[in-house]
Image (tube, rainbow over all chains, first blue to last red; front, side):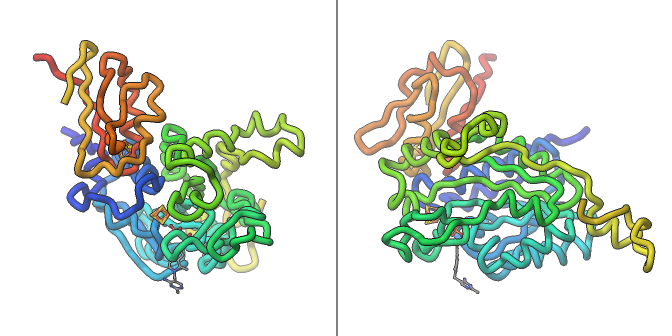
Length: 280
Length: 71
Ligand SMILES: Cc1ncc(C[n+]2csc(CCOP(=O)(O)OP(=O)(O)O)c2C)c(N)n1
Ligand code: SF4
Ligand code: SF4
């Protein structure tokens, strides 16, 4: 008889309490991941969570899957190696916005370009939480952080647009508030062959939230709900309105051949043999 | 621990809860109320629709919503 694996089969409950601050959304993403793994009934020993450094990068401490806790920015480099060494494993890279897009930015764009069969789950809290709230490559223009007390004078990355243009097969954005949608996107990403990205817009009440969103931790979480809209609604807004919202939803879902398929089918001088044109 | 006519039980782990207020604020049925320290108390269990969103939205795995077996 098949055993039903509940979320607790993926969650290390004996490691509680979690290290994160009160009202930090990281625990909500962790819960959604364990729920998705349970929905898919993936055997924990066939899942490897790869992490770098950061508050979100500590999530593997709480998972009963295999884990590789490496150095800052390198979760996808390690994840790539793990996947190539044992293609049967499901590899999940958990990264903060700094981990994924500042120090790890090159690994990120190349994992997407190669279309590595790895799932990246990015907790985007718009700053470096672990080191005290410095601005990151996703901090929105004019937001206040500890290193930009008068507002940051640079625009931030659109993580999903970047993932799309670099070649990811699946790209979705949700928030820590939207728990049902988050689980749905993570489940879809885990099943997708090729590089998949789920960007979860998150609160860091201790640093970014305190400086940019008025009110208590619940108000900061509600802010995520109030400042995001579905793609269908977003497309109907005028340019000025668009400025005030972030779009959520499945933004890319395509079938480019993944790295291993291309590699196995590759014949020098015959690009068609490897599954056709690469980037389109 | 509370029981309700619609056979749901909600357990809050007081030692684990960090008093963020999410379960209190975002419950559509307004099942919780905060005590003076922000700890959620289950006040209106009869209104609980068993949607389990408070459990999924608790960042600290401190809420458990369980169907009660009356047998
Ligand atoms: C090579 C290296 N450079 C810098 C650091 C310091 N450092 C630790 S975590 C971090 C950034 C964390 O921000 P983010 O990745 O966004 O994750 P968060 O903590 O917000 O979840 C930095 C710069 C480090 N640990 N290693
Ligand atoms: S510093 Fe920010 S990101 Fe880190 S645990 Fe606290 S609230 Fe979360
Ligand atoms: S959501 Fe969880 S941590 Fe927050 S107040 Fe409710 S039980 Fe406590």
